[in-house]
Length: 112
Length: 114
Image (tube, rainbow over all chains, first blue to last red; front, side, top):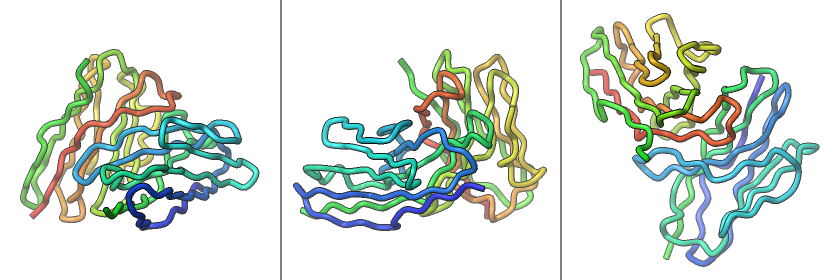
């Protein structure tokens, strides 16, 4: 089966750096994605890691270690608008191509 | 261009009634997905379409749930004989192809069953 674990809540202050971890179990692994969802809003895609290493997109970076079944999302220079829920998601080789499995989400609160 | 749209944005229905939720994907996107999100929870996969066919319906929670897609465009999720546990936000997403890394989500339909 598939399971993803991520912390339920993280808090930080403006300007700080925060790391949201995600560990997963799959029967086969394609890649790890991250989505952001503001309260009452639609999830929006942030990043994808198919290979080990760090992917950087502006203030956000995502890391993957396939050997450890682990990834993280790194948010730098935090801003109030980064307060949102962050979901990791995996695609599993043992499932149909279009199926994504999502974690329960991490609620990030950024304080002034 | 236009994003994914869903209607209605909110739906309140009585237990036992049927409801239909609509999704209009981004034009040209061959893959379309339905998810359910209960309050404070993650996204629960329901079904996805490749064109008008559904290769994976395994996430539909019961036979009260069904979905169809026509013209490789609009999709309808139908819930028959609604129950209170069906109350949730139903999200639709689309992507260019099923193997696309990025899915584009609509704003969702908030369903409340009283």
